[in-house]
Image 1 (cartoon, one colour):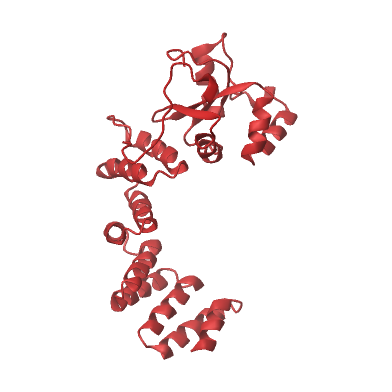
Image 2 (cartoon, rainbow, N blue to C red; image 1 turned 90 degrees about the horizontal axis):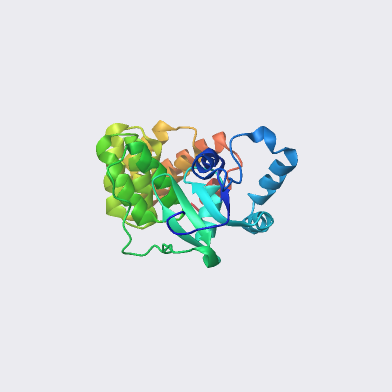
Length: 275
């Protein structure tokens, strides 16, 4: 901010208030800091309403003359504010690092250069702790930058930190992008860590079913149902695979078991009626 001549009242996520005050006091003050008791109930009620809707937030902070937003990647409000500010032509992303992002009103960016992500964008490159990569992942996740998120998670994998959940997220991204071979590879890596991981088994059943590999799909689906026998959705999917294999009697048995668990499961009744 100092280097680029960025001026104006900041809106900051709470955990950055003390950091901002440490560097700028008394010339600049944060919007809020950890001393919740000094603000009063009326302020927090305004804040609650503003953070429910971006238009309400814009109107709220305009009343305080806010022209800068300093947002920690993992703060709850960043999930709404980061993509909204990035896509708002009145605001520009001018900086981000492994902890936070900085948005500035477009007419007040000073000497900074707005950041626009594209197909050629690269992840931040530095030798940092896995924790820092996880925090940065929240930023890419909030913006829906799947490719950068994948690249960032790839950097975490060799450390072994939270490997199962990292692999699950990577597999889910590949599945969402219809990159089925890559998703299948990652789900297999999950099962090497936890061979009863229900989400991996369920999605491997989906991938192989859609690929016409019914025997494999049935094997994965059987393991998924075994890992979570009370899940009616898993049992319904299992029945669909059995129908595709021409095993209607087995499918009926599965559907009837499902309906004992949840008699109101409409899709199961409809499938039984069509069989």
